[in-house]
Image (tube, one colour):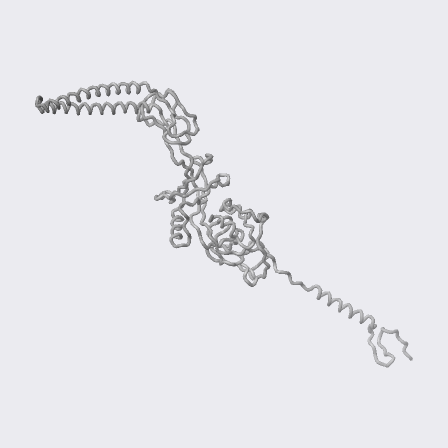
Length: 441
């Protein structure tokens, strides 16, 4: 029986040449399509491969050694330059007050008037006694001259002349005593005008008219304080002061000139006092309860803005570090145990963490004691983009305050607690020299 022919692609059979063919043989068009699909899939895989990202961008400053003052913020109290308690030197009844409370008075101004009548009588009595003694002296002089003439003629004895001469000297002494009594009476009468011993601002009146005061009593009539110029007494620990002296002696810090105005006042509202002060001296005795010494500073006070007893903070320059290095406060990072470190971009463009030792804050910048050298680039912004050893792209650091590049920055307005560190920085893009260099002016 002859087998029936089968349709192409189904079952097993022989082709025209007699060779066997598979039951599931695919047409050539299908094979070409499969190849194209595979090639397309490979191209899509190649296109999906990750593209290398550009290095992250960070803002840096180039540090360099520069003269930076050693600045400290210390607490202080305002004290008058001179203070005088107004007292009466004589007893009597206060009949008049001649000053306005709280006003300015000049040395020698009459402040109180004490009843002068008793002292006028005393002066008149002293002048009468003086006239009596002067009349006795005239008689004694005449008697001595007469006996001196008689003695030359040998008509009077030497004893008589000696007696007359002694009477003359006694009369002269009595006249001198009477003059002293008269001068004392005049002085007491002048003291009935109670005058200002110094110039300054007088406080409230402590006694009123009608008060009877006694000579030598402890009662104070008023108090005068000289307020221009004025003192500010600030305190510093003995340890800090001794370290400062050692640094100056070793040459690490340069000493300021004696006449330098090196102290600024920070008022209670955070503003700076308009005039700088001059450090006069430091006390030679430490407070045993606090271990601190007092430094006295003199300030001009023409508008009476400073009052005795006010609490202020004094920003004092105590020396100059001639080759100090400073970085913005935000450049300092902290390890888990609180040690400071900074990100430094090496010459090959890689960022690395570098430990440093920091000093005080000056003008919104940390002073670096150890760990950095001049010319190194320190990262100020962009920390969140980098890890140790990563390649970075650097750009000069610029803040919002740098829009007015030509305007100088008054770094004395920066507090050392760092609150204003990011608000008023230098406009320079490659250095932090400008904010701190102004302290050395």
